[in-house]
Length: 78
Image (cartoon, rainbow, N blue to C red):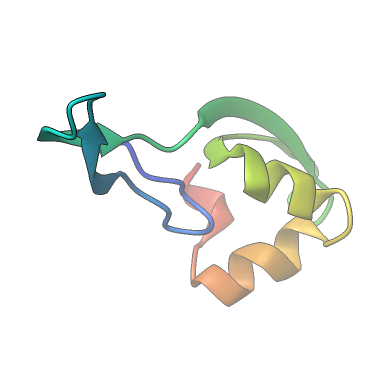
């Protein structure tokens, strides 16, 4: 499975690591992904998703069903 948030679609970013002498080498800035069990009220069951921490914070204010609908995800597959 790719390191990608299942709701927001966030993934790694290409960047430069800059040393003290200002040499630039490529590095990856990975997304902070967490496995999270979330109660899905419409399906009346728990859903286990791999989410970025930003998506977890957004879920505190938004409904899981509405968030998944915006992302175009069918939660019954998870």
